[in-house]
Length: 299
Image (cartoon, rainbow, N blue to C red; front, side, top):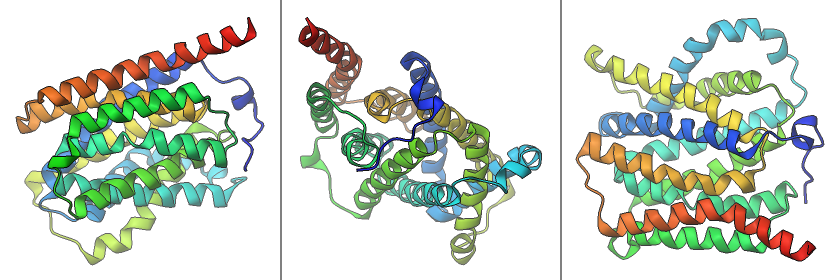
């Protein structure tokens, strides 16, 4: 079992509410980006969209890359950074492929299984302590996800495989980010952007589909939103325990539901609304219940 790194950031984490705000900002930005990806996914390969997303982000942060060039060439844990980039590259490619093949809300709902996977990974790979009550609340949240998507009505296809693949590699990326908690947030973001651009460039060239100038603004916007979301996500996870933030990810159903209605005229069903209510309640009540249980034991 790998122990969490002993750093000032981990010994004195920022307040949970502050990390939650950063995570909610990330959800809003990324959900908008995902809607754009879904619209473009029918015309362009997933890896091409991932490459363009990272390329636009790289251009946007190029001045910062030059400013922090000394830090980028003198990293203390180059293997850790490369592993994080590789996990994120796989997660994004699978995620974009899933959006092209499945409804927006369904991909988002499948992404809700990440907290369950993160609980296990955080325990065995980071050495984080996870209480039984948090496992219980997370399990109830997952039942809410099942109610939302009604798996008995889902036809199995490659999109579902891609969606769950994105969850797996995305969870590994979160774990690796926690291991790099001592690194500067800007450096993490810059190395991620550079690495993602390099890793996806060759596959993108192989499957490249020409892009009309009329569609260029949307492609650029995908990259800009992704870059801003990445910064917010790093601020949320870098200095906060994964087990505490993971259930908050359930709240993205609010953003995806609104985006589905706004961009694709998807009207949320009754089961989706009920499931979302369960998810929100379990997310909000998990931490207070855990604290009350601990207080009762001390008394």
